Length: 293
Length: 167
Image (cartoon, rainbow over all chains, first blue to last red; front, side):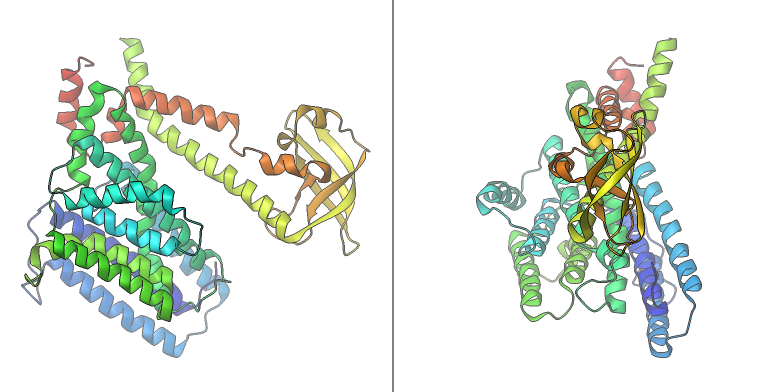
């Protein structure tokens, strides 16, 4: 893998920012009292760090893009290795061994992520509407109900969500990282999103193996208590009001469709960014958005 | 008591073994896909001479001349073909092979031209990997507590084990 310096920097920034976001989301969702920020006491210390990292690193990326420092291929390869090795370690530890950073989601998150994945798949693979209509309608209706689902159903919902993210893993970052002949211009922004989404999708892809094994606890009745105890860590019953949820779903679908029509940014970058946004910010939107709907 | 300890040891190792099985299987599938993609993109047919047949490692070697006139060498994975085909192969035999005519990753592998459909239909995951996946999944399905470590409080896991009479 050989990258220009600004692209390598953008990739590393994306990875670091996403790890910080995962940390912040995990602490907030587990209701660990956050430390107040030093510069801005209304935001948490972690949010302040994220903002600072984004600001400093994007300044560096833009400077690198402008000056384009001449670096040898061995230096660039060393930089790429320095990014990749710790990232793979991180993915293994927090995906397989100690899944502390998995964001907690709900039924509505699953529906929005499913919608994003299917819009991204549209045109790339042949989807059979008759085959998909029933499960998709079922998922959508479940997201509209306010009943708390049984733990076993939640686990199947969560498995579907992980499968959707695995599909995104195949659709997204690997192409930009390992195939230099991708059919769109590789900008720093694309690499930033590829880094962030790569960590997020990679983490979930590794966790999918573990979760598949966890699902086996549903097979024997005397093991089902384990799923009941584990699901609250991964799946939340909190939901945003239905009108707001439907509006969000429409906005996301519209954004993806408009981008496919007008080609503002690479489709896969927008889809990945929207998934990250939905997973990290949807629960915040449920609590904090003004009651406009 | 000793069987219980061995069983818990096996159950604790099973998730890691399953992960290894998954990684090996993914590697086998991607190698097979890469071979088919390379053959589709850069494949060429030629006559080749079998240099060796190793039935133990299920491999054979072929020598041939590439399209640019240079000498070529590739190996055949005999697991792709039925027994009746592999048993008929012998050193010195001349046959048609489908090889990758470009220096890309994995270009040192060729397939038998007459049996390409067997290669396409080949299930790339080896029986050994399937056994590892199957057995470890079975162990975890019976004793899944270890996959929940880190997600469920350890004391509650132990309490659950005690309640089901396993501890």
